[in-house]
Each structure stands twice: as C-alpha cells, then as structure tokens.
Length: 356
Image (tube, rainbow, N blue to C red; front, side):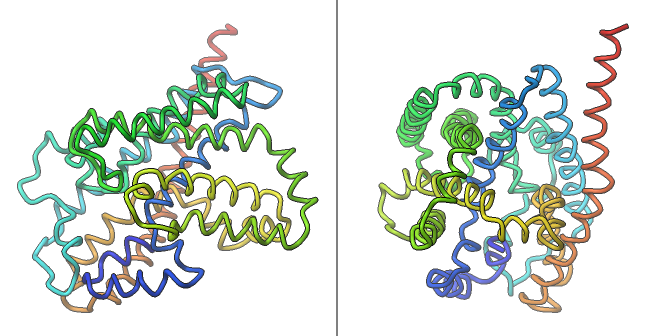
C-alpha cells in the first residue's frame, strides 16, 4: 500500500499521507516500518528451532536458509529484468516522479544485473527491484544468526550488544555521509553499517521467542484497559508519528522495533487475532507474502508504463495490485515452494550420505 501511494503525484500522495496520519490506516503509509517488522519477525521465527529440544546443525540451517531466501530472490531478479526489457519506458506524465525515476535508464548493463544477483545492497544493485535491498541484510544476518542465538542465551548480553550496535552504526552512518537511513546507500561500506544497525531488531525477535511463555502469561493476566493500552502503544510506536526531529529520524527505529515486538506478542497470545490470522484471506496473504514482496514493485512499474497514460493513476494502482497478487500466488506455488523443498532435499541427501 505504501508503494501504491508513491505512484500518485506528490500533491495527492502528501494529502493521502496527511489524512492517513489521523486514522488506523497510518501503518500502511510507513513502508520503512514494514521492513523493521519483517526483521523482528524473522528473528522470532528463525529462533524457534534453536530454542526447541533438537538443536539445528549450522550447515543444515544455512542450506535451507539459502534455498528459502536466495532462489526466489534470483527468480524475482530475472522477472524484473525481463519486465524492464519488454516495457515501453515512455514517460507517463500522470504518474509520480518516483515512478519515473525508479527503473534504470537504458542501456541495461550486465554489471548492474550481476550486482543484483550478488546482493550488494547498494542503490545501483537494487534499481531493477527496489524492495530487495532489505534481503541483503536478511541474508547477511541469517549467516551470523547462530552466533546471535548463542549471545541471546543471556538476555542482558543481547540487549547490551543490540544497543551498542544500533547507536554505533547510526553514528558511523552519519559520519560516512549516509545518515538518511530511509534511503538505500550508494556505498558498500554503508550497506554493511546498515546490516549492523539491523542486527538489534533480529535480537529483539529472538528475545520475544525466548520469553514467549512468560510474555503470554503476563498478557493473559492484564486488565482490559492495560491490554488495550498495550495495543495502542505498540501501534503508535510503529506509526512513529510522535515527533519528527533529528533524534526520531535516526533513533526512532527503536520505537518501531519495540512496537513490532509488542504486536507480535499480542497476536500470538490474543485468541481472536490468532484465529483471524490463521483463516481465509489473511492466511493466504501470509503464505504468498514473500513472493508478493519480491515482485510487486516491478509489476507496478511495468503496469504503469504499459497502461498508466490510458487508464489513469487509480486504475493503474488497481491493475497493479490485482496482477501482483496473481503473480505472487504463481511464484509461491512454482518457485518458492520448490525452493523450500529443494533445500530440504539437499539436507536429507547430505544426512543420508553421512549415514552411509
């Protein structure tokens, strides 16, 4: 929804954002917050097997994680490249400047395509499919994840490390001239600093997983008014509409991460919310969410260039949403699920070879 808003011209988009600020839909206008929710949720989900009765061997974990993340990502880069090649790319005056400048101008260099596959994470290496910048950090932190689990055996140690990494990397990004953390950086050094900056959000998800039973027990004992206040504070922290000065611009991500952890805990231990999320459209949207994340912006750009001038911006958005959902289902079924199955097959084959 955030990217859909950015297709509209600036005046219309700012009006939408301004109105949404005073409604429960404010969360849909904060795309940066969605990335942080994703990181906290990743930390929570990835840590579940490590806190179980059967520890996960690092090699098996890494193989499965690579197949789970990288193979659908590589397929999305291929699709994005194909859409760029067959798109008209004639400027569409009714759509926003963000739309016009999102795809790279011709000719398409092989080095740019290669930089996408190498997951360099810079602005140059994400021009074909903007949202994939966050996967660079996801895959890097996934590699070091077992070490984060070890550190999190002591919660105080994990909190101390998280705060140190967050504040140190934020200051270093400012010194490097990449202080605007809402913009994809141009330098490789800045991308590594951003990776360090996002490690604390994974640690927060790990701690939520580690203390899930205690947190759930606390929530169930809350009086109704405190329970409602917990929901409101978590939501407000994610929306980040408290202040807009330099401090919040650089350190407000901590509020978003805390709000994300709060919402995860509340959803886990709220029977009605859990029931809603496990049924029907919400369940389906959760299944295809990774594929949808990978492919929605290239489809929006392609639809905009092909039909934007003829049908107008709102119809363009509607067509892009519908097409993205259909393609997401296709990718989930024919790319994502086979990639997961391939990872499991590699692990089982390796285990069988060791036994033999």
